[in-house]
Length: 505
Image 1 (cartoon, helix red, strand yellow):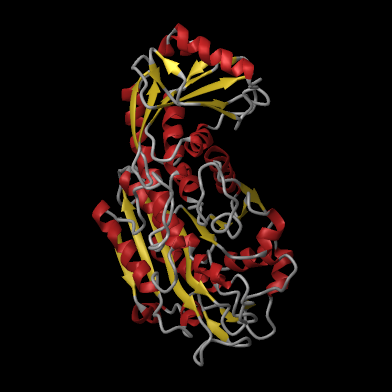
Image 2 (cartoon, helix red, strand yellow):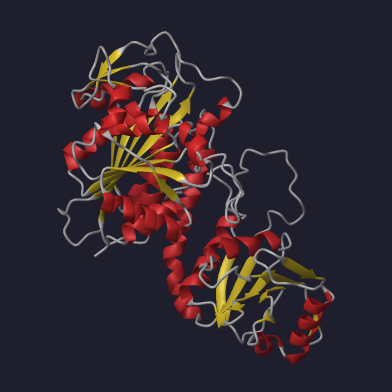
């Protein structure tokens, strides 16, 4: 799928041998003991001695994230060179090194518009193939910017100039091969970020569906359900959310048939795609409402994931489904007190029209279970502010009816750095969403808001192994990190790609 965002910020990355002569800006790594001894072979004895003296003079401790910049007058073999030393010392030997974040740290230290060479020698070892590719991915993700609408802003000199980064590694051919899968992940994350960053007047439900259809070029089978089809299926809960909008709702089904047996049950991923959420009749406060253009981050992550899996030719059958609506308050909008009949046949009392995402997911989850009978279902949604209160911006909430699936997701989160924290479910919480007038009500009130929302969704999975990821605190407006300087993080793509890899034959 082609992104609408400018891509000139993404550096071109190539790989060279450790003994190839570094060019341009030079990046080295050091810990409390200084440079890796093998660095001397690449720099020469004189260059190595100069760097060691500079580190000693500056009392450089090599702490993780620490950096020392030496001016361009630094000379190696008669050639002036700008040198950056990045600290990589770990607090203890048990803490795994994060090459992805290290790549992001390096990129933020590079002079704008300058090509660079990175000598991938960490104290004690040359960077292994997989970690070298992860570092390259970190470099690319850190370079992302969404600035296509800033027509009058004058960027700093060199900021938009494409740069070339050469990563000097032990086995360039192996790293280059390993990087192919990382490129697919990069494209998926960038696609998700682009979608979340887009304004809602551009990314309407129909436009979102159109962009998802572009995945057909990668071999993904696409089915777009319009309102006529949704009415026929009985998705009245989803349609109720969008009935106050001038924009028609959509559901997009995406299928990647990469398994040996095309009839094998797929892994299913479902995304909430509320392209803008005013709260409906239960309207939100004006302050910060502009952020609600990102209330479709779950759907964006699913589309980004499908792009990644298709690009790297994942050897497994995967289904992605996204419900696309706009929640607006006009004369046709649903009201608190209304009762709608979901596709499952269960009736839902609308207590709060701002508890709309769960209505969208209820119908899509039911449809996916009945039509495709997947091995498991994982849904992603910026569902509740309550999860942000509980977990902040560093973990997404994980709710599940299946311990094995929850464990696999948690492990994938730890490996990818997109962390999850499991939250409780249980029949006691059902009492909070029991309705006097219908089978269930769509809001249990303020207490345990993230849990009762998940408890609501569980009523629509029909016993299928299922997990709900509440990504409200991690997908948009989350803290800037080493690999993300954008308002939208693309959370979920790397996590779920790692999960899917564990199921490939």
